[in-house]
Image (cartoon, rainbow, N blue to C red; front, side, top):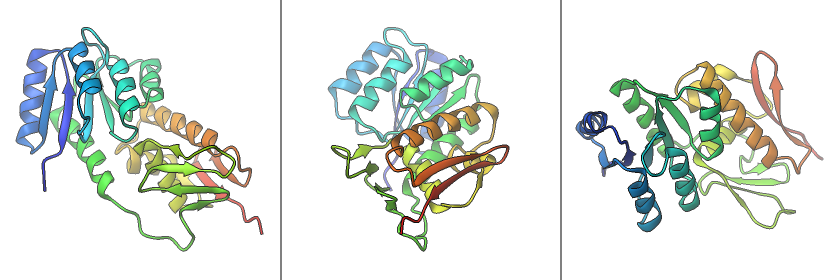
Length: 236
């Protein structure tokens, strides 16, 4: 199996060297850039043939949020993990709205970083068991988990989902009409259960509700104090 290719942007020379060295020791191919403007030029000007992006937020030239925006313009699927000393909830939510998938706050352990990366890469290879219902039909919507799109007959074209959006919708869909606890969702999708990841979950739930709003028979319900349930009503 070929090595997973990581695009790593970090301007701290010591941290960048140590992190890259450890990632390479664990079998990753790491492309390390230390300047935001150089990273922006690389993202825009070359094929974005990477498996995951690790982006520091505070960078010279172009910050990590803008880099995430540029990545999403090129590719909706590549996981983006922010590495940052900024722990404010507004910063985390801003990054998620721009298409980021996860955050890890500095200082972090190499073991935690590698675990987060492996969770993302492993999920990209996992395919859920086929349920008794047609998982590709959500009311009037068609959901293609492999191609990452959601389509409705009244919309002009299919909506491309990010991989994280598709993973969350797949998990809810696999357990449709039942309640999934918040902790279970966070562990399965984000690999951990804490306050900030819970806020991330709420952002992604809001996105999916917006995407599904055309069909009143498809709802993501919030079961207060417990979790969420994707309900698909029988229209027959």
